[in-house]
Amino acid sequence: MERDSFECVSSLDGIDEEEIQHDHQFESLLKSRNNVVPPAPSRSTSVHELLECPVCTNSMYPPIHQCQNGHTLCSTCKTRVHNRCPTCRQELGDIRCLALEKVAESLELPCKYGFLGCTEIFPYYSKLEHEAQCSFRPYNCPYAGSECPVVGDIPFLVAHLRDDHKVDTHVGCTFNHRYVKSNPREVENATWMLTVFNCFGHYFCLHFEAFLIGIAPVYMGFLRFMGDEIEAQNFSYSLEVGANDRKELKLRVTGRIWKEQQNPDGGVCIPNICS
Image (tube, rainbow, N blue to C red; front, side):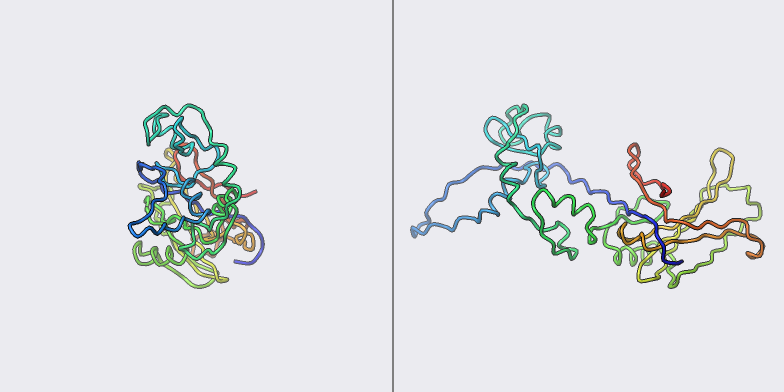
């Protein structure tokens, strides 16, 4: 492997939260028994609470909808509650809370991946854009052949692949794998392999698959960079496929690492060669 340029992106499916319905109400400040007025919440805290959707509990972004009684919720949850306010059960209609949308512009919030190490703070409406590319964001488990639900940062996933999936790990920028078939035209069942190796201070996944398309056997291998798309542009790779103890070279591929895109129908990531 050598430094060059290529593109790569790691998939991140958000984790859907179950629909949670909360009853919210505004409360007046009341004096306690010793006539001491409790301290009012800070402006940023109280506004942030107002921007929390009562159904999914996520922060709301335009369009923010409200019912005739002033209760708000996000546009995603508006369809989930069948156009009924989750607080007072009144019909929502198409009323937008423009005042709350405007107030949100003055807020600055921390990245939601702070628990993974990100210390950045962003304006309210720039937060989502950052989180989509945050270097601390969790990744899905890349283990082939199963829909593993585990997510985490890269060091956690490497340990997970090694300990839970028993994936081979190697140090260095070259790796040889021997796939023995007495008759390469016969592929009875889908076969796949994942190998993780560490070089240049980063982790890479080598995927190898053998499967049938109709009656035709297909052998596929590709490399996946574990990390940020911008960092991935510093590397290139080459794959060599041969026979007879590699004395006879059959195929060499040199280029960019495969870039993944979301399949809009099945919701899974499929390889798409970078241009």
